[in-house]
Image 1 (tube, one colour):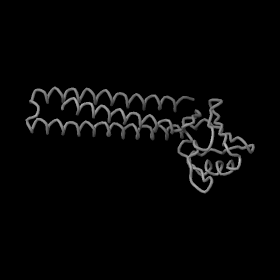
Image 2 (tube, rainbow, N blue to C red):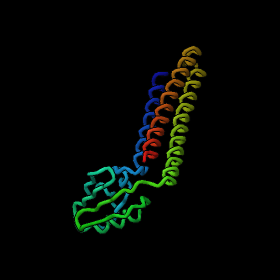
Image 3 (cartoon, helix red, strand yellow):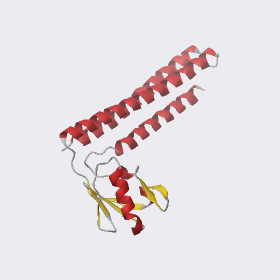
Image 4 (cartoon, rainbow, N blue to C red):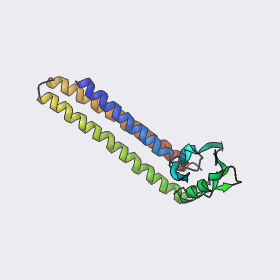
Length: 185
């Protein structure tokens, strides 16, 4: 029972870290990544379709993103979708391939991005702590229902706290790494 509770908490905390890592990939740091355009939705063939399902996305250089739609007829739609997105990038097209040149962010923009990183890191820490709170409630309920002894409950609480500390540390490291990447000139 205790092990099940701790395993469930561990799993939820791991998912929180994975979600944070995915969110960090979408924050533009001046370096090109295919994840930058993952959230862009293109009007194609009468429906809204995610860009990765319509084109090959590659990163030939550190500051260049190459988008090659599988169907040339939607190149204009892809360009419009990129311009409408909140990336702030101007796509350049030759009719077959779209190039996104990613300029280095200004000092002010980097500071704003660091604030966004701090906010998302704090949200992830809160999510980890919420998982801990839920697991603690479950442990207390087990103890109250006399399914586990007080000593076992105390040991499980200590293990849960160590687990929480480990994941808070991972979240902090992910945030620190992204902050260093953003502030790198």
